[in-house]
Length: 408
Image 1 (spheres, one colour):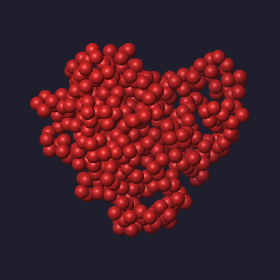
Image 2 (spheres, helix red, strand yellow; image 1 turned 30 degrees about the horizontal axis):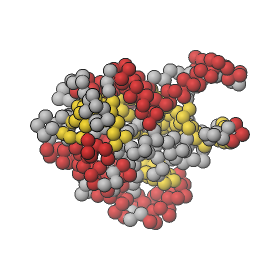
Image 3 (tube, rainbow, N blue to C red; image 1 turned 120 degrees about the vertical axis):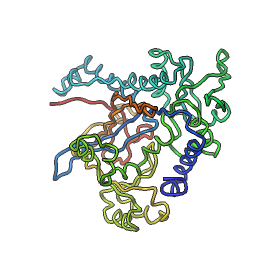
Image 4 (tube, rainbow, N blue to C red; image 1 turned 60 degrees about the vertical axis):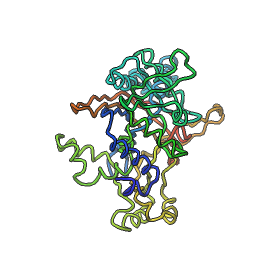
């Protein structure tokens, strides 16, 4: 895939990122290590004619959010169980059925591991955030954990701010950030760049923002994620992995049963540009059971069911390469709960049929000359929404954070 071909040609956002990565490769990659803070999302697939199973919705490689806030929600529910017993409303609501959730410590451990690998204890970690950040509280808990448990300082800046404050030494490739608001440390060296933005075109309103991303990537700071790792989380990559014998090239040492189990967790999907017009024709014919996905993160970008045919009518043929069709997960039916909007109180509660999505967090540090991979599964989140809502984003207002109760 490149900026002049494939998805990069059909999708300007992907193409701009890919062009910057090609420039980094051309001048030489200064830091081979890469850090990923990942979240793999699943829903229960319960077709009428089959057994229930967990199926993957997507694999997030950038700005995998709500780990720390999910931990707080789980702690809230455990506290309510201890203090009220939920008034005996269910025999399942017992303390031992609420699993531990220590996602904050786990994600901070991943960032601290990358920081340690950089081998300068006086360096800082950079959080690249969005303008007018709405998800700041989820990020602050990681900042507090890094300082209190690992003695690592964090600086938060947007891509717009970094266009003026960031510099890379042409000889050592060291990334430094000017901090005029911190008189005792007017310039700090960065060990790790953690992106909580940069995953949507609106984060790059000008070419300068893309060039700033290139500047960060050209340094010897560990990127979380690097541009290629971010793009590896794209829906097109997810679709390509489902093709025969592709997954096996990456899991050549795995047991065939393990590979089969992984494949079984995926829903059927295909490229809209597959076999000429065949991919689009099939999407039209089977639209009632499909979702169309572009190369985007953050929610609000997909096209569902009856909206698919008119969307395809207006989709230029050259843009088909940037979209995939995915079979919808058949979620369980008849699960009811009350949904309450902030400020609505109990009088504003609406009884509705709901579905939930499970996210599993983990981190991996890889890419060094010894090809060693450090990785760990570190926690989970649950999001619940009304069954009629297609999207699942919490920050976008489609769902709420929830927690797990284990049952026999």
